[in-house]
Length: 325
Image (cartoon, rainbow, N blue to C red; front, top):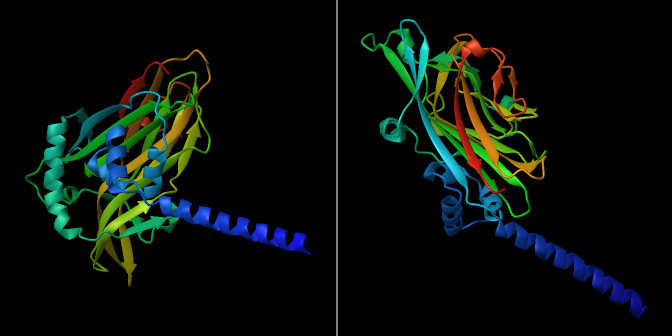
């Protein structure tokens, strides 16, 4: 009888201990501002990037045992559309010009975007607003004195290695001002030869701010389950830049969106033990077509993105390398 009592007591103690451990684990998911500052410095993240990361993402970074310094590169692009011909050209620009435009857009939109509301979505189809294919308001001739319309894109690329012999590639894009055409784009990061992605390690999200005049609301909407394409040379996601719309009694109400940004990462491993140099290639393919098409994407060995309808897209790139892997 005493033996049974002791067994029951031991079982009860184990259950309580397990409960307490789970409780402690849940509590430790709450990261501090100091933790965020540490992650931001170690991984060379912008203020906007670190602010967009959830506590779970920050915890991931805190647990990374780096074997090398994080390698990062930033590229800035201006997409210039001729409003008469509707043709777009792309040129590299400077961080200073990009930041100037960013401050101008922030001053324009910030008074309208005072809410911190974030709507986390399981799938793209669950967005409570219908997508509306749109182009810049300038296209309708609202300002006939303006000959061009420019969109401004920042593309960041990272790579690092870990003490367990694996590594990680990561990329982030940010439209500080939307381009003339706003529909389905492709965001990807590829890897060099003799490397492979580790299945199940990928993480990605896509956010945009919105102003809903119909319901008198503003906030930030987040999409976490993007349409994904995995290939031998990397991973790509479909990004939808379009404004959203309501329908009320047959009338359409546009919900304006801005500050579109997205982030992705996945872990990598060597396929050749003697490999000492690792390369990451980020890509952003912007669709320039009034009638939207669904992009056909592939990333063959070597990491360079390929679009089936390449004549309808402008593709910009970022690349970064780490040595002594």
